[in-house]
Image 1 (cartoon, helix red, strand yellow):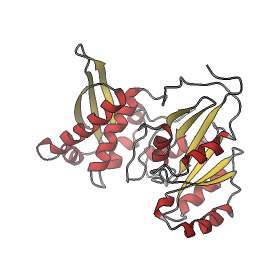
Image 2 (cartoon, rainbow, N blue to C red):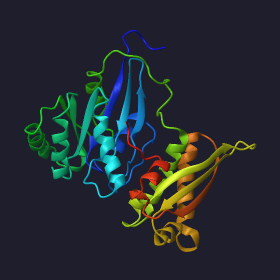
Image 3 (tube, rainbow, N blue to C red):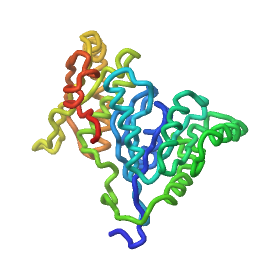
Length: 300
């Protein structure tokens, strides 16, 4: 039961691709619900992560990285990220201090100037730079926008993340507890399972494949023996990519299944039987109907 003075609200995490948005949310939630990869544009949908204490509930929206679009899927991803800024109590603008300021950061800051929502600048990956290098970076960003707060962190190590949460709570209104205390995401289990499978493929494939794949769960049910049966389809755009995903004598697909099964079992807390299939959908990233079928659609 939420207290009378309970504070709650929605907070968007935005930033260039691969600055650590999913890593931060997983660190806050304490469990993997957003996939992580060293390849950009890993997140394609708004991932809702729920952080709950006795006094506060924060619903984090981990948005796709804002980038120069190259397909209808890229257009969808940018639209999703920017549209989210209108829906929240605060925005976390995540920047990678180890990469330096870039045109992508400038583009995002320009978008932030058009909103009234408080923006907290989160300088991530401070573990990768010398402490003396931090102050000039803070000064550089401060000249470009009036941020409500500036918090340096290391999302991967958890450094200063608690202080970030304290700063976020300052901007939350009194409100209800939207989700039960033990719920960490509002996405169905099928969505998270599909994302965990896609993460393994991102880790194991070459440059030409990662953005050409989508994963959907076609069947998920508990069998009589208590084992959860999951049938998943991996979509690619070309026959050559299908061969890469399957690998020599099925070796790569088998390894994807092995690693994904472990993460999914940790998520569900039960044994699973995972079947993976690979299918070709030609140029699916530019076909509106296929994008809708795979769950990519613009918010209205």
